[in-house]
Image 1 (cartoon, helix red, strand yellow):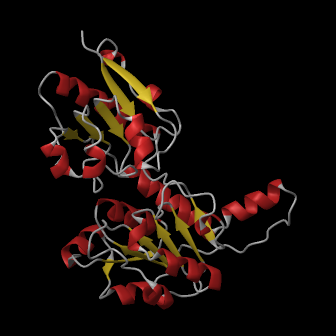
Image 2 (image 1 turned 120 degrees about the vertical axis):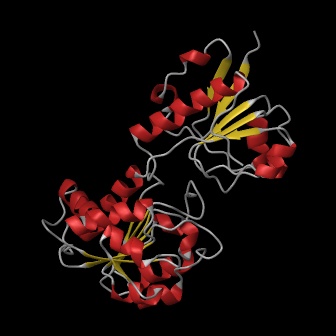
Length: 320
């Protein structure tokens, strides 16, 4: 029986093997996990040279035509999630590579959004660090949520859920996007801002929940950040490129805004010397939005199903 080699990329926590049951593939597929991230295409191509199947995590590793051309043995590429902007689907099709996805829950990024927002508002990291290290007892004054305005950039599946939590806290919730209708705002029970400028200038907390595209790339720049109150906070668990990173760093260093909670970056993983690692007023997490036990069970469990279906000649959850 032919044994197919499967490479699992960016398995940082070495969780792939335990998050799902791979035993149905035991006699037909050899699974090799890579806990490190490959930043160089030459290194990645060498690591995947013998792989017929690759499982990649979210959009962390790009598969452009140049890389695919160097992987003549590759037959099946599985991405977590049902949307991926860094795979060249046309090149994959020309090369005869089947691309499949998995479902993904929107609940973990909603929960992380609130972890960041609450962490910022109550100075959780600073206070916990001071307590552990013998620092001052109570060094910050928390920002209230009740009665404050939460401005949401985007009111889709994730934004809508974030909105409902804000309402439960007693916040005044306002949303804006280029395509937001009054009907959708009414459905969620929030106010619809008349413009991006209005939302940025009147919110105590701004949270980004937009898909990255030509209209949203760089949407929040120096001008928009300057509209925010000095006491306001920005949270971004969506895509780094929606917020101009240089402008955000400048606002954090100058104190133009009270702080930011960020889970997404222009380069991932962040290089050791990246300015986001040392920026003041920043609560940052290493792209944990989708990282939860339930999501990993879905990603890798459905990856196993995708491989089984492909080997049976009836691939499922096709992307492209």
